[in-house]
Image (cartoon, rainbow, N blue to C red; front, side):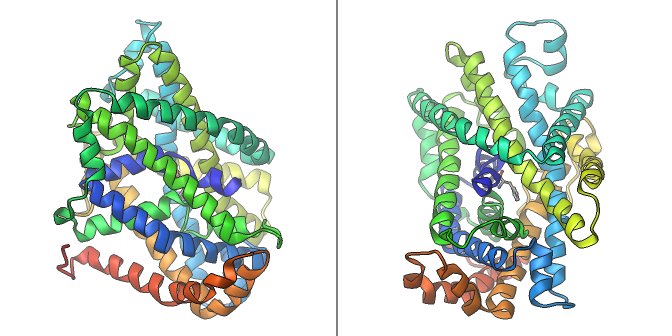
Length: 449
Ligand code: PHE
């Protein structure tokens, strides 16, 4: 349950459509699904197995298997990645939270709120208002920290178990609405009819990293979650459940966005703002849309919260376990540090010209020039993929795929049937494919389909 809460979040509803849109549509969707199945799921099982076997967080588990070795670096990279991702993820979560008020209040209030937040479908005014987005970011970090501080993650997860089915129903309703709009079928084509001629090395890496990001993989987080699993738990089954649910929500989000995007003629919208433009456009059209919209952003905020909690846990658990620091005091420092790291991201949607047009990586790797997208590429794309590469080598070769398989067999009815193929995947297929995709950032293979 906790792992699903971590996996399902802004990655599905905000990041997935925005990556689809930046990377040419259906071909990206296809690659993403393939990567989830052939890389994400078998890799997730490996993280769970190591965690359950060692009863430790990522760094501790790796150091426990191979004490004093350089492999610890793979765990430490995960800590840095968690901090990096949360620093900008928190900004987007702050937007989401702000949209609760923006959607609910701009209908009623035409004075102060409308001034600060912009009209219901206006994004730029909202996102470029530093006096608004920074407090919202701060607030979201504060809520996350309070939850972790009081150790009430379990309570939040119970709540989200009740709320997520509501989100699901809402998404189904919106899919139906969006696909009955006139002109929506063009959007559906963009989303579902692949054109592989546009696929580049950047697209392939984006699809791979989307699979890792969405499933919360590549930073050892699922090692930590695995450490809470009992030996009776069937890891194969849990993994299929988490993966299936996670991909389903992402696909649903796209089924709403792209038809609506084309039908409403807002095709110029893209990048990180996509979801924050298209959903409000839909809510503006449906009767009672302000209410539906408010509920939608509340649910999305809860989904984001179960992910930010898991992200904050990564550096916190590490400091507590390895340096015996006091959990209750350290969590505030960690969180404050992440907030500071996130400030440039918060200012990069119009508040600061320099940060908005930051650049850094060539356009074939990251289309959007803003700091948040560039920084997101380092941590959400490169660093997660590199982490997964190192951890899969560690599990396949250092701990040993045989040992990992023995762990996976415990509590599992069906794993035996897949044992051989899984061993092949974790030792050869996953590391080689991830390595080649990372290498291709430099466009070494001139492959095009
Ligand atoms: N998987 C989360 C999402 O899709 C984000 C996340 C990534 C959380 C990595 C934890 C670790 O929203």
